[in-house]
Length: 294
Image (cartoon, rainbow, N blue to C red):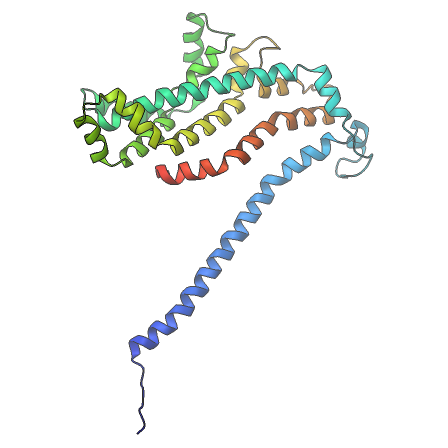
């Protein structure tokens, strides 16, 4: 007895759709990998060029600017830059300012976001609107009012003039606010039923859970504060009190540009940022994915 098996049209359509879906997924993955490789090369070329230029003599750079190996390589530019410029003081200033900015930003912005997420008070909508408006204002538009304000407070030339403006970042408030809204409401209500105050809920329940958000805000604040140029240039008036970006800009002379020394100083300036990103890149990705930033 012979049994004839026939496949239904739906089954044939399903079997034909699977290879097409797999091919489309493979093509999309290859396209993403190609775009990622191109962007990585675009960002890597200036870094490699600065590194190679810092290792070459000035005469060779002037005569053969496009040749990477003419004149040989040496560490003379790094020794000259470290011995003749207060790079150590610039590093210390940038580290202290960035560290204080991270601490104050995490504390103040997380408290503001917690209040906007859970507390009910008069003016809550207006406060949220002000935070939203802060995202629309460019930092350059606030330079003159901030300068007049800190001059009246006699804070010009101090670390606080650089730390306080960066401690109230609207984007950091939104990061914490998005994360706090993602915490299950019954967890907060259970803590309140047990008699915990809002301060204790914030310190012992909400903040330990939002470690990815803390890491993301802290790292991004550190990088932004380290790279700040315009505001530190206006506020800090002494050479040894300057930060790394401002100090590096002072090395460029229009009459006599020492390319190797400038590039060596630039490499020394952005190496800490590269190290911070390589060490904490997992926390950055995790924090961005968890807080739902688009």
